Image (tube, rainbow, N blue to C red; front, side, top):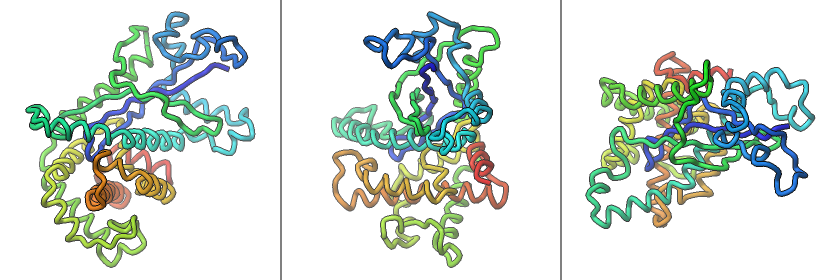
Length: 347
């Protein structure tokens, strides 16, 4: 009977194009007092707020938080006690919820990315040296976010808040899952961003060949292919031309491959890996992008040509992501933790 929400740790390593990850370890935050919908003025803060900073005044941190793994166990063991609405959702698989969480986070980031793109564009126009040097991204730049989500009665996640500076303070309690969650996430962050990987250019060229082979040869018929999601008919030369003139996109691919070699427990939320394995998820993303063209180039970018080029970017990046998934599925190579996870859940 207590209110709860989820704190997910999200790592953004590029804004335009977007590249972001969510860590598989996060926190379930619980209020210390039972929720009472009839309480006057909403009741006590410990009834309607789940913030750890509020509730730790009434209980130790280990008692007012769970690791994600405990929620997974709860869903698995408590299925028999759920009501008819919940049973329809197949609660016993926490993984299905986590894919929804990944989509919610990625779409929230994309929906707001136009504001960031516009801000950087204005800084460049003003001749800011910092903006001129860094552009939309720089090597090893990142932002760590704390994304809070709440579930409705069908276990559909809703993003309620995005924190730009999530607390990294530890509880100091003995055998604290709270501290372990934060420390593991921080270790994986450092490993992914700062562990050197050799031969990045060769790896990009290899994947580029696989993208061409997968999407533009005779055996690619029937697969989600480049340039067709919006009814366009594109040739491979169109994409090669885009890559040859788009320095930011080239750098994006290099950094993306470097990161995927040391992901630890990070899972990529964008480009959306699950779209490569679930047709329903691919269609969900196509609809979202068709309905929200501003996510590609900022609110000032309105020309059809510019929006089309940004959609080409998305299609190409998703094609690279699907090559990564297929290479793991068919050959057992390039199997980062997030791809292994998805393949295991969709067997």
